[in-house]
Amino acid sequence: MRVELRQRSIDEYRTIIGDEIENIKKLAEPLQGKRVIHVNATAFGGGVAEILHSLVPLMRSVGIDAQWYAIEAPNEFFNVTKKFHNTLQGAQIEISEDEWKLYEKVCEQNAKIIDEKADIVVIHDPQPAAMRLFTKTKPSTKWFWRCHIDLSTPNQAVWNRFAKYLEKYDKMIFHLQEYFPKDITQRCIAFPPSIDPLSEKNTELESRFIEQTFERLKIDMHRPLITVVARFDPWKDLFSAIDVYRMVKEVEPSVQLAIVSAMASDDPEGWIFFEKVARYAGMDEDLVFCTNLNGVGNSQVNAIQRMSTVALHTATREGFGLVISEALYKGVPVVARPVGGVKIQIKHGECGYLAQEKDELAGYIIELIRKEELRKKMGEVGRKIVIDNFIITVNLANYLKAFLSSTR
Image: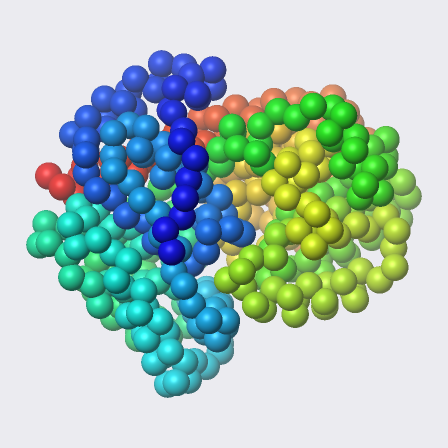
């Protein structure tokens, strides 16, 4: 399925990055007219789709013929690829022969979306990875696999088989060098993903809209608010987030917790996990679930983050965690576990705090609730870190460099 996208211009970002725009345009000149195809699992829900909604139009704005396709597949397929997601991050789950066959069959059925005349193909994550086996393109076409998860300690049995799907890729892109699989490091490159400061989730909002959002969700704007933005996924450890909130509440009784999420179409397991987390949360009126099930879209997420006292992230494994950059860009300090890409976004003691144990996380949140000036200072530092390293124009430049290095 081809994803329809609105027109964007890189010049819209001039107020944020200034003359760096000219450097990006110059970088793109040798790629003028190149046909680039991105393929992922879903057009909505999750960080990859959010990135592509901005990245592909910006590639077009610098002269590249960029297209984006989302694969079409039954729920059974996404059940299998969720197992891939978990096992490639280390979970000890078995994948049956029938599940491997289903995966390959769906990838083969979707292979027809790849234009044989494409110059560059970027396949995102495990879901469509096997499409490379079933697609014929011209000999000069360069294939990239963009992996948004942590592959540093995979389930070895699953990786040994899955790696065969990657043999014909020219390059593999990871968020961090530490994610490179040891047996294919020579074909790997690393650069981080990004947020879009002009997207619906990050742009400035009118105060009345924020007030209406909080009124509808029954969150008190005048009391401290901890916000967790995460998919309902076992790796996010939302049970620990609730535990941390409860520890803070013992000391700061007025505190509230918002668990913010989108139920993605490629994650059937998410519905099951949502029920488990909801049961664990109980009937606490100060603990609010904010999802697309109760009308929370990107603008509402933006509003909640902007009015948060502190953002909390308790994931035990994390590919990158763009929600960290989202909060920091809005001037909100983040308290998180030091996992994956979280570690390169948060400078401990400068724009937030890193800690593994729940009592430490709670202690840092209590400190931030009580020290308004500290929150403000950390928020300013965090916003600059994101603008310098983790916004969409930086991501665009990194892709352009990767494309250029492969076509020389």
